[in-house]
Image (cartoon, rainbow, N blue to C red):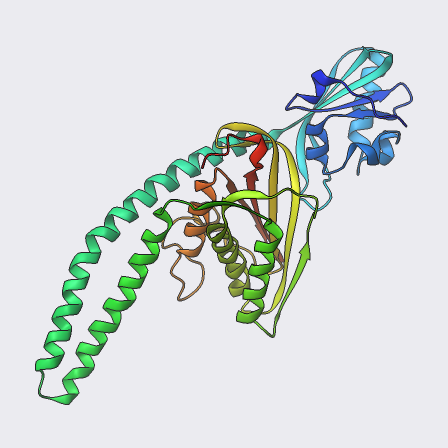
Length: 354
């Protein structure tokens, strides 16, 4: 079936589906393709009851609008999205005539969208404030820490009793450990070195590093959309961000489990308060125990870790690097599956400056 085109509907951020009177899908706009995780080519010409999973409530809404010849809205309509958690949407069905098509216009608005954007903005503000606080603290700590280590080193040289050297060695080793921690806290604040690179080469680098670190128990499954364009970003920062996220999952699984590295294109995405027509989406999915409920809202905060002995800096650095490239990180977690979703605007859809 020929794909219909409606430039006005193509530009909408709201997901739109057009049905003919036989309830066959005749058109879906890019926002609907993104929301339903399907392509227009795959469902245009398909009856609604076969085009989407669990279509019962949507069909009931179409039936009501058809019977009463009026617009009808079904709130909290659940949608089953392939590869994603179930999504609740507001579904409005309106009998319509557009061009030569008589049928029904379906509008789908995710109920979580506005709350997600608000949460994203709040987390970005909190993260910025927290990073600035940690950065100032790190600077304040570094100087006296250096003096402390130097004094311990001088004292070590002056001690005559060998058994006392153990204590000065403890002081110096702990000072070195804290110095390394402060350096890691300050690392994300350098300016990005922007280049064009293939995101899949970066992910393959992450895969090789993880396999070297966890050679026996981790299975890494690449699932790439090879049609994606190059990313304009700091290659080393992006690799480090992705590595930190994937390593966090591997450590949570104690080096035994499966990690999926997936890339897709996302359409009509709001990033840093700006709507982007296209975005690069990277999913890092593990089958570990999941994130504890009490940590979900602060998982990206510095010095917060659910792992014994963890510094709680890896995910903070990852979020910092992603934010510097006007991207976002979201996490969905339950026992048996933790999914980190990283979104970057595709360069030709932005002003390219980082």
